[in-house]
Length: 117
Image (cartoon, rainbow, N blue to C red; front, side, top):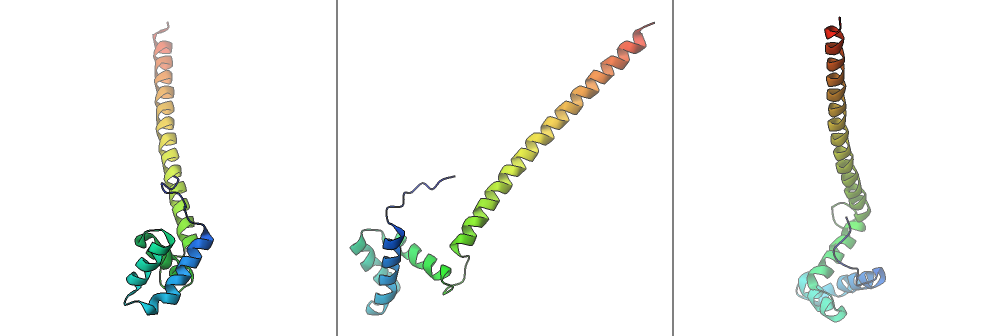
């Protein structure tokens, strides 16, 4: 499944914005104030910039959580697992159908052999 949003900002711009937040955080009363101020300057929402900052902290081990590459791999594996489970269910139903048809065929064959003199 693809992302619904487009990446309006390049990785370089994101990294620069995150660096600005960390460098100028002390000049503001709170992190959110720093994020809001810098987000307005670069033209993104404060929420988006805050997510970039949190992701950068996790990726650099400053904060606990799954690094983004591990989270992406986990998401891909979960998707693959779901698809394989669906394929297994389809195969299970198909094999049950085939077995039922074979049984039906064998029953009609044995019944016709019994009725022959």
